[in-house]
Image 1 (cartoon, rainbow, N blue to C red):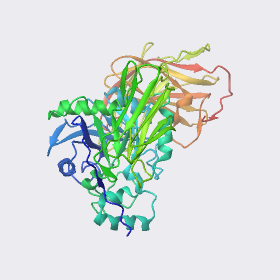
Image 2 (tube, rainbow, N blue to C red; image 1 turned 60 degrees about the vertical axis):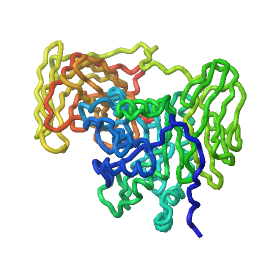
Image 3 (cartoon, rainbow, N blue to C red; image 1 turned 90 degrees about the vertical axis):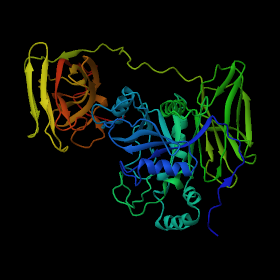
Image 4 (cartoon, rainbow, N blue to C red; image 1 turned 45 degrees about the vertical axis):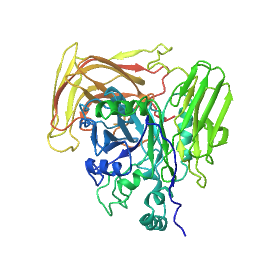
Length: 541
């Protein structure tokens, strides 16, 4: 009596240029229960063409080359733990030269440097430790739905009932826990008013149930839900320019490009399957597909439809607001408005979207320049390089410096073994009485390195920001308002503060134990605050 309805099998004619797959899967290389081969076999049984593996890691392991297993293309990615939540990195072209960790903006900067793009994982998870907290960073994608998040926060009785129903109808029982993730969809819609952002549905499959909410999972109460059950619950469809060729490198590149461009839509397969979504805009200059930008701001006809489901409710949204509805299909004829148009399709009997498209974009604002020159004349205080410097390090590590009028050279060796807080630092003592609101570092390193730049204030509190260095000398400006507490929790930021010392630190957050290297500083200056704030800390805006 309480079983969810069986999945409706549709007689859809799916073009060979549409490939169905699953995104966000964990194997026994991190906290999943099965091998990559087990995952591929389960995907093959579920009739999928590809899977995207996203084991937890720091990206120092080079992504596995794409490979077909059991007729399923396996694409390797990584889920990285940042200070603001988890970020899935797709498309990395090599291993990271150091562990990716720390502030979300810094991890994302490294992901982009390595040729990849970053997707916010389980953004509004009921578990606050998994929830995303850095909505101002330039992430590239967001999981509008995460199947693993849907069970969190449910009562024990609800989960027990779902587990019993899953004996008879596993995918349908899993999908019965889904609800429309309104907050996440609102965030996505608001963000796409300003720039393209890809939305994906994550199966987040582990085939391992651990009652504890922590990630990664370390125990297995039961190896459920099975990978195959998850693959029959939720799929990600990609729209390709031509069918898959069977050549793994070529096919993986084309699937990756289609995902990155937003040529993809999500289907709750447990409701009804298979289905092909038509979503495009027609103008006098041609047709714009899903994920694209309108040719111009002239009159358009926006079309969305699913031929196999004439009774489904098709909804068109503009910047999150409903602008048209229809049965089976819908068209909107009007001049476009700036922002993003997308489609949601509801299968009869379900309040959760059955199909969610990626947007078509209209007249997005130009991307802001990465650096905006200040219109305020700013004084600086250069720090002498030939005096007043010293080193700090833990007992397992070593640090020595060479100084002259042109450079300060830190020669460091982090202690070997497991990561246990090893660090080495060069410190400049500051005696200036005025308040400053930033600093500028000119430096290079003998290898790709992410250093922690820290300020120690009057009173001893330390605040930090990280910067990327390599063999090329780089000039990096650090506004104090972007710094985070280094050794204490606080909602304050040192937007204008009396700095007593500046530290450039190499530690195991972004450097492996046992690493030896050299960091060379050729310039360091404090930026004078436009108005003296008296050295106070101010609340984070």
